[in-house]
Length: 184
Ligand SMILES: *[C@@H]1O[C@H](CO)[C@@H](O)[C@H](O)[C@H]1NC(C)=O
Ligand SMILES: *[C@@H]1O[C@H](CO)[C@@H](O)[C@H](O)[C@H]1NC(C)=O
Image (cartoon, rainbow, N blue to C red):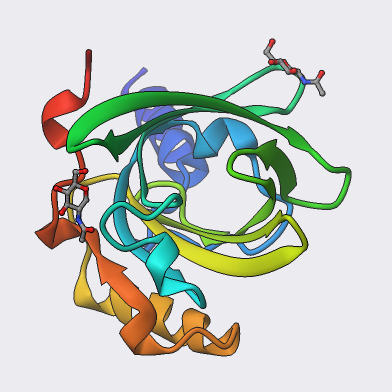
């Protein structure tokens, strides 16, 4: 009996998933259900910095992402309008390309998840086309209010890869990002 119990325990241990402490980073074939949940906007970057600076049209803060059964992503966001936090709800539909979505907001926005580990951070790339004008944006989202320097440096590297200079990165952890308006 004891031997059987030990044998059983051994099997359970052998089959338990190995946790390596470090979660793997996903760069394609994203699982939208795992992207869902609570997020904080940590860093924003753009080749049109005015769009993400104070009163910029794309200075938007994430609170929550919802994964719909049809694959669309719903967003609960906040923006500051006339000095006050305003809630913004958007739904982005899949475009058919891996990890790519489309949403109308201050123009036509096509965006992709560039990489995520689902549990700590996610990096998005967005292209906005409005009245024949195009600019791009990258965003770093965190599951907590702030992220490690290592993850932020990785984001800086990715921005550079897309031609967005480090001085065009806005640190929202030091700004009003409507934390007080969350959960309402
Ligand atoms: C997917 O479902 C959501 C929620 O019902 C809806 O808003 C969105 O328009 C749907 N997208 C498509 C492409 O059907
Ligand atoms: C942003 O808008 C607010 C309210 O309209 C205004 O008080 C503030 O000066 C503006 N900030 C900048 C940097 O333009």
